Image (cartoon, rainbow, N blue to C red; front, side, top):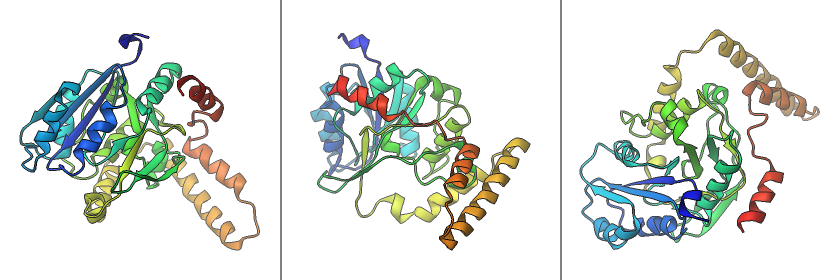
Length: 292
């Protein structure tokens, strides 16, 4: 197959003073040997040796820049403006893509035209890069987010079509310092469904000192601000009331431990509009047979 027979995938890595991990991140992308890769690194002016590591691989990187920025989301916006791929996503400078993930994504987006946004398996790595957890991702919908049921879409495993990015505004809100990813998902949900698949895509590195842990309360505050400032129409308000009522019933029946609540859980899923957002296992079996 020729290079152009694969969809172009754009990946952005924002980085600032991550000399300990940036090499592993870069290698996880370029060693995929994906034939139509658009890989852009946006550095915020690192002084710890990060630039030397980037230069080491610059022939295998589409483009990299180093200049002061206003934070990670500003860096990502710079990178996405430079990108040209039909499929888009980002991998942070201490996280990694998993083996064959770009081929997995290409297969999904090529074969399943209705998928404009997909999340792969939820995966985590330790400091040495070993995978310590992998699980089928939770299903989500816009109503779930409005009902404060948003934990969590894994950013490292989430990719989308450029057409969805453009419909949703072609920008991450860089006025937010921590929850720019959540705000982007919140906007995406207003245009399309998030699909799940059980294929490995990306992995988050679990380590001490991460902002996601140190400033979790601030992250939640930004999330609440995004939800609270959204204007909810009458139809959505009615659906949310039904969901909240079902949540109460389910909680009571579960506490009694004598009733089967599967019917109510299924009914809630219908209200949440998440019944058919998985790419089913039979399709995934065919994917594995063709790419492995």
